[in-house]
Length: 217
Image 1 (cartoon, helix red, strand yellow):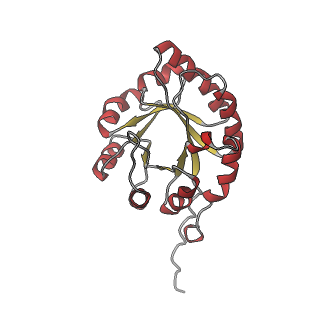
Image 2: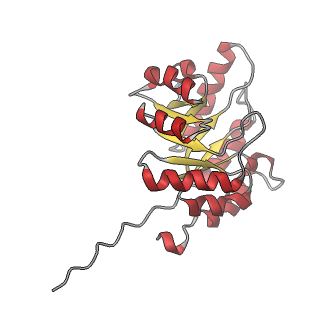
Image 3: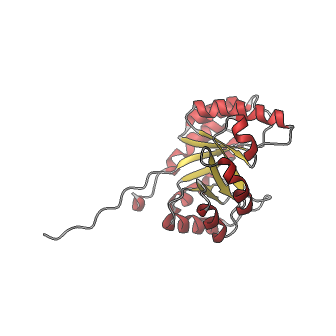
């Protein structure tokens, strides 16, 4: 009897990675965030912090952490690795290979160390070798970002070669399907906060776009 090739395991549909606007206080945003967390399968929230003194920022992190972690998601702080533990966050997201190399040792192994702002394949491989828990492609850098085609290419390359999870940033609803098809493990979004229907309704409407193409199932 001839043996049949083993059928590859089905790839799970990507989960969502929410990115907040820059915040210095939780206040009313906590309410909108809580509703958003109830509306979709959210794996993590990236908290972007604005300009404020250290005590205000720590208080903001603590308030947002309570909402996020209660919903079963992880809270990751943009850049401020030194405040992650003090605010009760689950980790930090560092921009650039150099920033990651400098801050990751203070986070690992107890907290998440994510990496973005990776301008080259070499940078992406370098942070993976240094223990990045995920890499992110496609997020804006000073208001600019690569073309969608370039982001798809980078995500597809990473998904084919590496086991470290990949987060792909979608600037709009129309970008989600191609990034899912490219092989992203997580889809990062922040456009939902500006949706006229509200962030929770925007999240509900994008759920179907997270389904994998039939060829990937």
